[in-house]
Image 1: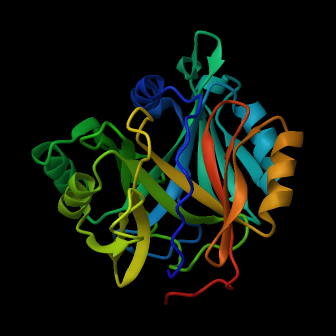
Image 2: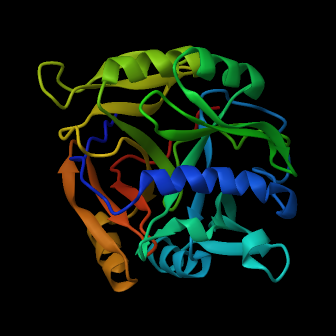
Image 3: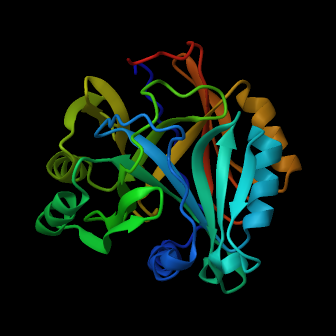
Length: 305
């Protein structure tokens, strides 16, 4: 992937400590939820190192779904009983499953909405990854566990306390291509220490790393590479007081129109869309507090198979 997405890091209303509690709470309710497959029909092919899924943990699934439906045109299927605390809402982009939403009341703290998207990277052995996380200075938030039709899943914290997940999909991973409009296109980790973060993700996931940006500036960083493709970036934060975060980006046809749609749908524009190379990028926050990036790209989707 040629384009480097490097928006200025900003403060958001998301409360990281609350999100950590949410991840743990999701495990507690895992047995009560139906976890749909990542792909259907099955591909039976895995692409280790590729970020294949994302889950939104939020205090108001209905409000979040209304927002994302209006902004990205996503559609939703909810599985489970009448109790929202035990349901799983599948996110579909033009009929393609790309993520999900789960409820937890702990996403509200001091009456301030707070939520977070947690990305999942494909791995061949989640238990081996868990062991490497522990030995490399990270923390196992919840150990690998089989989640219904999804497959073996785990959630961790890296040494800076940033949440991320791994999955060995039961049915295989989606075809490996650059996301189309409405799909995930990119992720950036905003870090206090790019070198330390790069060493960690090289160790636990097996990424190669290549320099990204201007190494003489504070905005330098690295790209994470697997299978010959750039999968994500790690960028230096401008402000050390800002919480480290993995930020996923959705590909859009028109970033400025998407930003306006986000305002109209009750969200916030945290970072106004601005050109960056051949792309236009911006950062939004949904009405429940979850930050999410948008990117308008000049190139057409690239198949990687």
